[in-house]
Amino acid sequence: AATIRLDSVRKQYDDATVAVADLSLEIPAGELVVLIGPSGCGKSTVLRMINRLIEPTSGRMFLGDEEITSVDPVELRRRIGYVIQHVGLFPHQTVRDNVATVPRLVGWSKQRSRERVLELLETVGLDPARYADRYPHELSGGQRQRVGVARALAADPVVLLMDEPFSAVDPIVRGRLQDEFLRLQQTVRKTIVFVTHDVEEAVRLGDKIVVLSEGGKLEQYGTPAEILAR
Ligand code: ADP
Ligand code: ADP
Image (tube, rainbow, N blue to C red; front, side):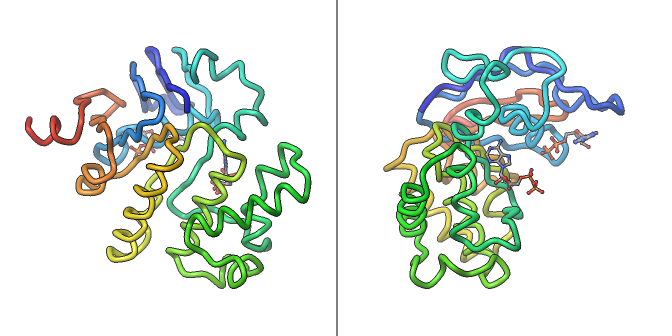
């Protein structure tokens, strides 16, 4: 795991919207930090800058000692796993091939990728014998999110970015996914930035909580107990 550091980061979109005005933030190595705040306050923008889907307008971002903009894009994709609300699995690929996306991209051998996929499906609670050769439309919403988590973990990243990964499933499945995810984090200990708008979820999962307001302004930062006590 590696610490993520944002240093006076600003993002202004082409239409002049300032999504993040001036954000400095440290996500400690091996911790799960939740970003919470009203819709449009810049949470997704922060994640998308960290994995370089978009570039900040100004400011600097670090992964460990390295400046994120200096890391090779393919290597960055290996180091940073990304899970979004509607997972974005490739519809014409099986579960197995979806999970193997990044290992293949970074040149793992077929054999190594294959073994890794089976191990990961077990890890996220999907029996490979039943699910590895299914297509995304043959899975439930909760199962698709599990495949999304498996895919994000595939090449053993140091960081996971999760953008409302459990919001699209019903409350019972969500609770189960949260429980399993907490257990998983206790064993893998990634640095995780987790976006949600659900306070209960934030308190349950977060080692730390960051409360943002419009313009990506940092309102509060602390443990769930500290945030609740305010
Ligand atoms: P959140 O994830 O907290 O809901 P976002 O990061 O998605 O917030 O958006 C922050 C602000 O930036 C919002 O005002 C949104 O409308 C705007 N925004 C997001 N993406 C774009 C874009 N591609 N172009 C212009 N404005 C955008
Ligand atoms: P979409 O947003 O339509 O799903 P993308 O091309 O942004 O399409 O992403 C497809 C999938 O690839 C995402 O759901 C995500 O799981 C994965 N992905 C995208 N960008 C990254 C990244 N920087 N690192 C790791 N995985 C990524």
